[in-house]
Length: 138
Ligand code: SF4
Image (tube, rainbow, N blue to C red; front, top):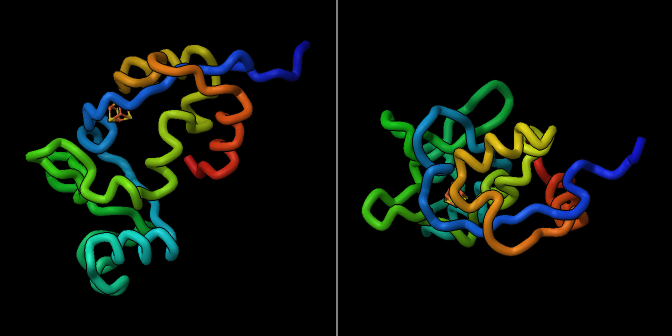
């Protein structure tokens, strides 16, 4: 049996900016101390204020708050874009190449149905995908 991952020839991805991954079903966007500090700086707040205003404690971790409709608290409803895109946490930066999405061709195909950019656009090599998985916690 080959020890190559099933996606060894790479996978395609180009974000279309549809915003589907920032809205909808409930979930968590995990943020660590360094990410909170960077996000706070980006919106010109202290880390303590940012933490109080935009995050919630879940067990021993922190997640960005979600609004009642499922939108991420940092998603701009008017422009339909992330307000802190350049400083977005690693969970957002590594989407859609999460371990959970890459478990099999079937889970990847499901991801492609949820994310209009997955499975389209330029080819991302298996090495680049693996490098992202190394920093993914999802
Ligand atoms: S769901 Fe996919 S295409 Fe849409 S904003 Fe998120 S990453 Fe981009």
